[in-house]
Structures are given as C-alpha cells and as structure tokens.
Image (tube, rainbow, N blue to C red):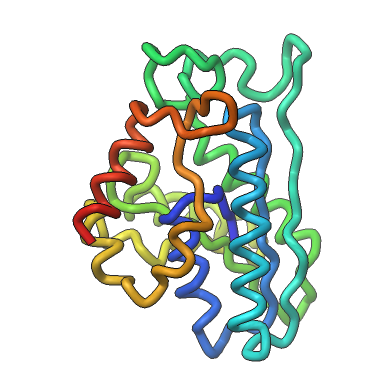
Length: 211
C-alpha cells in the first residue's frame, strides 16, 4: 500500500484490506523531500496502527510500515531540481512535482518485486483519483502494460480512481470516518501545523465540511 498520509490513499488502502484475496499487507511511505515529510509519516504510522487493530485478524500477515528515504540535501538528491511548492516551500509555486507519480510507483514496484514470494502476485495500491493525467485510468493502464512487458509479477490498482471529486469520495466512504482525523493533507506546514491556504488544505476542509 503506497500511503502518503492523506485521505485518498488511506481510503484506498482500507478498501484493499477488506478484500478476501488480500493475504499480506505492507504499508509503504516514501520520503522524496517533501516539506510535510514528518507530518505525513506520523499519519501513516497512525493509520497503519489503527488499520491493523481493526482489520488485522482478516489478513494472514500485516507488516509494519516501510519508509523509503529518497530525500537528500545533496545537489543531485531526488527532486532537488523541482520547482514545486511541495519541495521548495515556495507558496506561490505550483503543487506539481515533475513526474512524481511515475517515479514513486516504479520505486514501490521494485520493492514489491523484491519481497514477494514466487507464489504471490504483488499489487501496488494507490489513492489515485481521476483528477490529473498521472492519476488517471489511462495512466494506470499504461504503467501496468509496462509491468506486463517486464514480467515483474507486479501491477498497480487504484481502488478510488472512479472519483474525481474529493467530496464524493468522502461521502461514499463515510464508514471510514474515524480514520479521516488521522490523516494529513497540507503541502507546506507552518510550525508543524497546516498552512490553511494550499490546495490540499482547501480541498480537505471543503470535503470534510460538506460531509
């Protein structure tokens, strides 16, 4: 489960946990140099802990969260070239991180391929909503076509990809509400608190207030 600490990936993970064909769960979080790194990681730990408490008896093996650290202060550290608000902290910059999702999916797929048994199929679970080019069904299909060519035994699933609107996503998954407060959405926190004015903060607040 590729967990960001946000609501979308949390709901997607919960939907996967409830599937009867899911026998082993590994929550995975990636540090790619984002400004909200520690808040996101803390949220992942809380979500995973509560998920295991509520659903662990349904899963053959529910493993502890894995944190993959790619962030670096060196000149050529991952995404140090980015102009994104998430990396630079510049509140006037775009939220978009250059080719982030394809890179992160590839990294998690590599990890999944390395730890899966020969009798297992590895599924990388994402919280993609059909909102951007790199969270669309077309993107997921294309990534899976690549994995088929590579014969990795890994594929990507996006359990909430049919939702474009976060309000509708939360409305359809009200039963998971106890998890919503454990999540984090802000891109550029101030003194460890949500900034309140980035797109993630705004969409989260609007969705929670309407549900």
